[in-house]
Length: 292
Ligand code: BEZ
Ligand code: FE
Image (tube, rainbow, N blue to C red; front, side):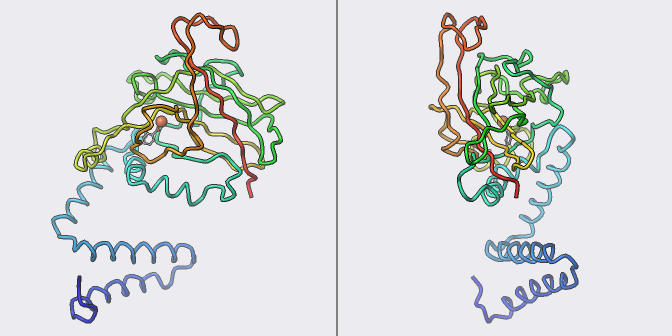
């Protein structure tokens, strides 16, 4: 570390001051606050690790590769934010501080806002491979009042670990939109979530490999719940069990870990549907907080 009175230290600190001062005329105070803190922390990092010019070039090459692999189906910058814990930290900072609402977790890059409408009790798998899974629950506000007509978006990977947007033929599967009934209830068939790797054939995968980290996500089913006057919630449920050991994007919250009991194919299903082989079921009651 530098002596704080050395000419070298002085030169480095003067540069930080100069850059911060360059934002002095920023009209929006929030933009000024964010950019000032960004520059101060960025320079503190550069100075702390004594970044070499070769390492700086490596960082530029990394970001350039992330840009090149990003398109309307692949978002490497979200992945980068996710594996560095920045997505989850931003969610925690902005989550309902009272703890009365269901906890939020990462959205990930596979949400689509035009998922097919599925009737209550319908099947969101649309042919995606996997063990059938019955999912049910309610949506209420923080005082327990049922929220009728709440919109639920649900999406998941198939049991090969792929989301439909990763299929080569562009078909839609393992996602749907539902609306809760008059009692705030919902129910649908899906497939039992299984572990899968985040896309790791790009620069973020190289970063994980270089640091000895696994690209695997704990098995989960995504939910986005919204209702007029309520804060929109993006979350998952995780399957309780052995695969919960780690999650490459730091998304596991204990309150979101749910039992998925397994039933034999000859046991009656909740809606009388005939299934071949085993099936599972899960219950997830969602609490939304007010929008303000
Ligand atoms: C996902 O759960 O879909 C996901 C989250 C973060 C990165 C990649 C995928
Ligand atoms: Fe996912």
